[in-house]
Image: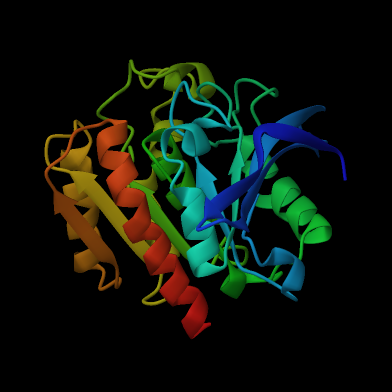
Amino acid sequence: MNRIKALFSTALLIVGGMCLHAAEVDTVAVASTAMNKTIKTVIITPDDYPNRDSLPVVYLLHGYSGNYADWVNNAPDIKEMADRYGLIIVCPDGGFGSWYWDSPMDGNFCYETFVATELVTWVDAQYKTIPNRNGRAITGLSMGGHGALYLAMRHLDVYGAAGSTAGGVDIRPFPLNWDMAKRLGTYAEYPERWEDHTVINLLHRLTPNALALVIDCGTSDFFYGVNEQLHRKLLDRNIPHTYITGPGAHNWDYWRHSIPYQLLYFSDFFKKG
């Protein structure tokens, strides 16, 4: 395995004079044939990984302008949650502003293919995973929340559960923001692309219980309105989902508090599977 040890490497906790192994955090380089490059990816394995036959995997996506190390740097408690729930957590680099699409404008941005196909195949080959949809979930923040739901709804055979925290789940109200026009072309020129590449327009792909869903957003977040609309459309279509709102803005203070609920939800999903 082509591993580049991350800054964190293997953590050790000293408790009462005892040395206890905790989650291991590695940075790996994963080849993307679609983009003809390698993509850095943080992979967290729980402390008991060597003793386990197989473990479920949560794919955790970063937001716009972020990178593969964002989650482990800004929400380090996810390492403890990997231990608590017996999860492998995979945090790929999604580019500065890919929105996790295969861009029709730029062949260097094929992040749907990378995350949903190339990365999943690589992780299943290199780690002791449960190599089916019952052992996979995907979530993320902001751009990554959109990406997680977009990929899950388009690849129901790959992921059994999906989430979003403060996700940009309807891109159409923001035609000039966050490099989206670079990936899709402008809304004025290519409105059909924008309609086809936004989460809120993919609900026709779902049937009740086809995908376990957990969605949250802070009430002071600029994406709160589109998350409310997504929630109502899911209700209209009788699609079961967990929807959580509460105080919070579009920042790490909110995301650090929201991700434990998402991981608990996925842990319960994996137990049922």
